[in-house]
Amino acid sequence: MKLVRAEYQELAKYMEHLRPTRQCMKMLKDKFSSQSQSTLLSIFSQEYQKRIKRSHARHHTAEAIENYYQRYLSEVKKNLTAPVLLELANEVDFSPSLMARMVLERYLQELEGTAPSKPVLNSMLREPSLIPDRFLANQVYQCTINDCCYGPLVDCIKHAIGQEHEILLRDMLRERNLAFLDESQLRAKGYDKTPDIILEVPIAVEGHVVHWIESKASFGDEYSHRSYLHDQFWSYWNRFGPGLVIYWHGFIEELDCHRERGILLKDCFPLDIVTLCHSSSQS
Image 1: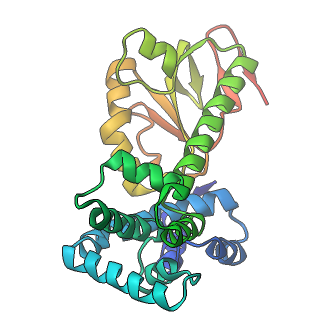
Image 2 (image 1 turned 135 degrees about the horizontal axis):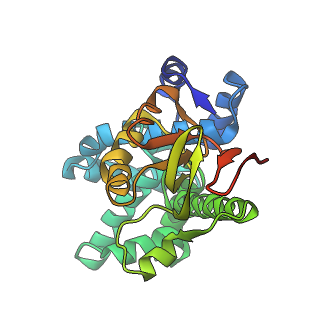
Image 3 (image 1 turned 180 degrees about the vertical axis):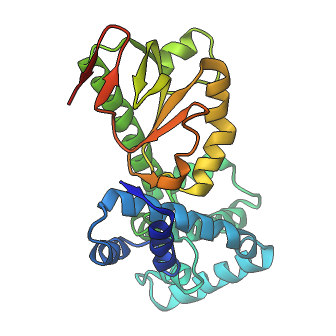
């Protein structure tokens, strides 16, 4: 799904004040019914993460963390089963999962007398039953399952979706009898920074030569695409030549402006592929 910049900006503006809850996705789908749910979720997740980064420092001062922790202790005494952390996160417009992380870290610091290690903290966030306080464990669990942008559950889902699309890409290449090396094979050969696919025999897509393909199970907005160009795509271009990036959940149409320089954007696997042996329309 390609969006012109104005369409994307309309979506982003509407998302500015939405919370990262499951309910917000229904609101988005009702409002923008022509867009797929996966595209809307990807855009919302990216826009929400930008919002959180802008306010991150304000929420992570020692004073703010202590305030959140004391408010949690006070409110949970009044009602042990109320979703205190979830409501607190919504009140201050912060990610529920990140709020849970801060409060859990503060609790463990008080319990152990020292800051917990990152592996210990991460393991408790992934498996709240490991948290010694069962009421806090329940609070952390509530935050995790009600946050659609941050947290171990979201990380797991994103990783699985990324893997799924890489497998889909490899299957499509095999169906068309295109020889390639994938990332694991390239790493085994000693390459340290590689695209998902290197084609052993280049192809042409829409008149452009393609030596490599990168799979992105996300929406290509200006911020993420600029970062990918700097950190990945131009490096691939320097090492392997021109290539193709597939943003499976769509991208801003105006970003596809580097075709002549050797980076082509698509929102699906290309149907018209020209090979050195023959040219054909494949579907």
